Length: 485
Ligand SMILES: Nc1nc2c(ncn2[C@@H]2O[C@H](COP(=O)(O)OP(=O)(O)O)[C@@H](O)[C@H]2O)c(=O)[nH]1
Ligand SMILES: [Mg+2]
Image (tube, rainbow, N blue to C red; front, side):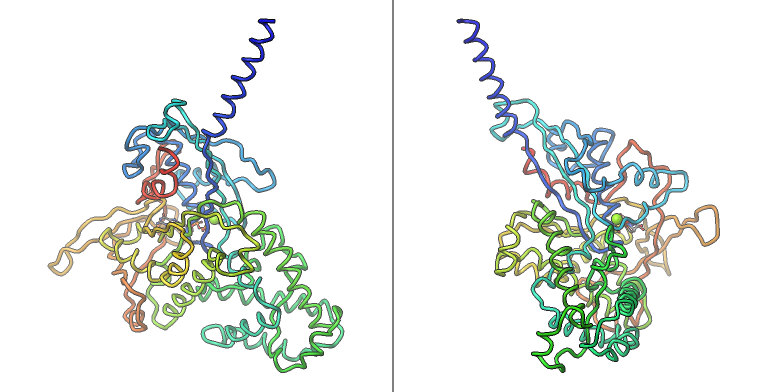
């Protein structure tokens, strides 16, 4: 009898402690996004590196759990979602720390990594229950380009075509798109579809999007998935394009067009794309995120240009950020609130690569980013999401100092580059220019005010040591600290 009682009691105890543990364990789904080359891979690599090497002389003084001594340790653990590629931390850290360091290779899709962070609860009720709690951090890296497709969910094929035509017909896109628009204009929308021609024109449209992004430095790319298709590369679901002047054809004929007419097939591919690609991404991934960091490279578009392309690419970046942030203001719009239950409580905007300018330029960098997101931020405030803007460098690759120039002391930065065709790196010292605090006027670019060089990572960084950074501790403070008290 006594024996049975004891067994039962033990069972109960175990159950209680299991329940307790479950509620003790905290969990954050952190999403990292930004347009390609904004610095996502470098950012995640540094974030993981700072946490797992904490204690080896890392500089995280603005991260309270470290500052107050309740951070214990962090380690990588297997991710839960086995169908998503793993974020390749080891490869990234290897290229950063090799003899001639290089930046990690660009990735083209979504990836995930899970960290278990041990800490000692000091303030929360947890301190009465345990000496050590675990915060599980799931980090997801996904292309910001994919978010650019969200507004399409609210648009019919006609509306999207019309809007895209306006974009394609204006500077700076017009010069490049004319040939494509003329070709499509020659097609009889109600004629039987020629799938080969449709595939060919889709290729041309995708090529245009590549030119906009990588040659003109523009950010509004739609569908964004076309330039970063990941596992969908070559799939027919990515074969469609906008059809110009749809408003000039008969509305009834358009509505009644069958799927094997040219226009009918374009329309059904568009609808299929929204259902199978855009919606699925949001439902499978977006819905899970609790916290989001949006990375933006505001320095590259500032780079010295003798023409107006700087101001155009800046305006385009602003529009893209606005489109991206539309994904978060689901509360107001009926469609989005039905599709996605809003969960994100913290949103961090980071202006990346702050090591490209001297420290006194970081203030202006933040103001500039604030200006870029100003409009959307207003809409979001309404949704009660906590927001912050920071200028950061995930992997600091320069040193700064003063130098005499024409009798004046000016701040300069120094970094490594690999001159074309050479084997060894060279040091460059330069004054990169002043970051404007506001969205620059047109004449800013005529003075070619900014000099941005793609520095190499510094040599001598070690795999098992924290990487040098700027304000990664403030990033951690904002994103994690409240869950570790
Ligand atoms: N100097 C410096 N350059 C950076 C930093 N982060 C990224 N970069 C540069 O930006 C490029 C793109 O970064 P990456 O992380 O691959 O961007 P992703 O496409 O958003 O994943 C890198 O190859 C580097 O040249 C940084 O913290 N400092
Ligand atoms: Mg990447």
